[in-house]
Length: 577
Image (tube, rainbow, N blue to C red; front, side, top):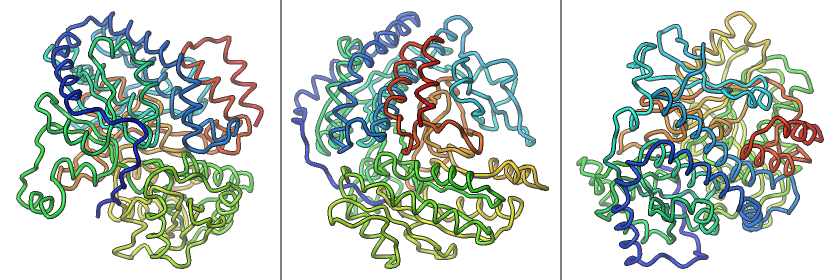
């Protein structure tokens, strides 16, 4: 069952005329081989210019986004635009600089000593985070791995990194990047991946929802624009269709919905179903994609203190309210245990916390209509705020039937402020996690990301750790976060971000391919991040961190120019929760 199609928003900037698009693609075609041939030192220099460019526009970039999304200036929610915008882009750039220096000096990004391991079944894993001294301080207790395809061994791993550089690919190519309209860093980070990992120059078509960011990106990345290695263009579906069909565009990357993907690949209306049935796509260029999912949060039963209940409730709420829940990895489906004595306490704490946040501006088109479909299907849905008839009140739909075959909450991504909950049977990790794994794999739409919340005592109990490890092995998701939000995997850059491998074009679900991946692995399988069960001080992405906006800005400036002398300021700002 596909996700809901997103209505076209009203454009705020003039669409790029078709004849200008043709000239842009022609220029990029003329420059693609020149980019492919530049030295690694030149690429590192370009990345340093990008750091300066992003930092130069960061304040205005964030202020404009805050205004567009209706956030109060100086509010904790403003941290979202720092963290999901310039900070993450700067981190990505720094990771690429380090990777390219390693490629120049050693032939591939260097894997830290002792970071390569194997699962009991022989699958190779690589610890990719923390790999900087600073990250060990800023993310104490966090660690992330990239798990490899079964064809990868310890012995051949190095031969499956930095393919473009290892094979000396000088052919070049023009990639069309169809930008996302929700998170500011998605478009520029997709461009960075295409340019510096895949050797493709780019046309970045801004999504009309956040096309106001385009001028900032053009200015920040002007070292690429001036060389005809990047161009930012504007417009709706007609501009996208013109570029998709353009003979000068060699490949496509899209972050959006599967409905948009299928319209590009298979056409629209009756033609789409007919082409799928015959296996004759309308568009045959290489295409990669990240298309969202109904993001589960698996809550493993255990004995939690009141403080732990409060912290993990806030953890879940942060996954819901961030960006008004217009995130492909926003928490959407709590998978709980009907046998957990603290289930009601936990759910009530989540609902009371959500009720404490005013509804956010429904800036993403169609949010109200999508919300209505869920409420109509579930008349007992709980509104946790007054429904003003305009925006989307935080809404909770609980106690779903796990055996319902056509449950909309399992099969459709709401992409708005709705949180669902389904109870399964199981008293402890050993019997609950297998049931949760099977449920998420077989009944929940999409394979992009999932979180698991599990208490250390549950892991230490008989069979607990083994059950968790089996779940990590068996869950068919591209990103798995233990005790934290899967969005952190998106932002680390050294991890991969994308759907679980294997979706065919006619059942695309969460997409094909990976981005970020600054260790430049050829055949990654999934990324797994583990975090402490309780973190102090509060992370800056928690919406109740009263100093979050200042902390997020401080971290952004740190990522631009890391220095030990900046760490005390970050620590002090973080402590003022």
